Length: 225
Image (cartoon, rainbow, N blue to C red; front, side, top):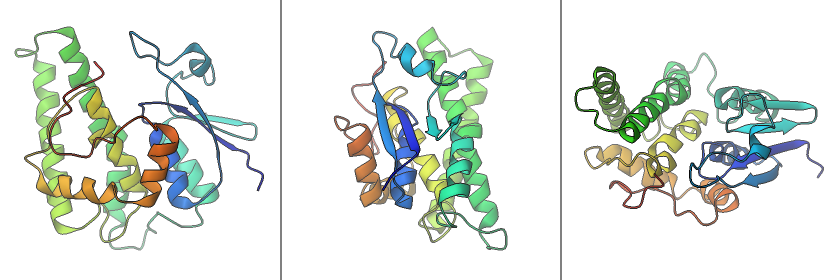
């Protein structure tokens, strides 16, 4: 089957989510992989020049070149999903679906990245912004823990795109900002079950074959930074 959809994947990055989304949907795609460049671990110029944003993820669909995770999710779900992995507005868990679908990149990941760069900068004990970010992250994980105590997935009883977009911040991103999930048994159970999904295994093997997925409760011992 011919395929116009190409995922430009920067290894060890959030573009893994796009590969996984396509695997869950069972839609064909081409995959072009790029490695981070030492010592900064930035994307190579070849990748950064694909789209003016210069950041991962990026897809190409025919003449369309598109960046931004949530925009790519919306594009693929609207064009290719045929209703799969989404909840309609009349569904009782629709609000949960929309909330967690946008929470990942709207709040969770920016908070983690803020803490990461604060740590790289040096001592953060007295930094007001750092303390706010830490407080918000704690509230975020507590809310996620409570939600996963009520349901097997973030939007209820079924796996949705909200789960697909949320996992990166709980897994691969921890290679850049190691943190423990030992206080959150429901999140740990959730990650263990996600790790058994065939589509997740295929996606990680295709995009990052040398990476052991970060699915355990303990913080990674060998961070990239």
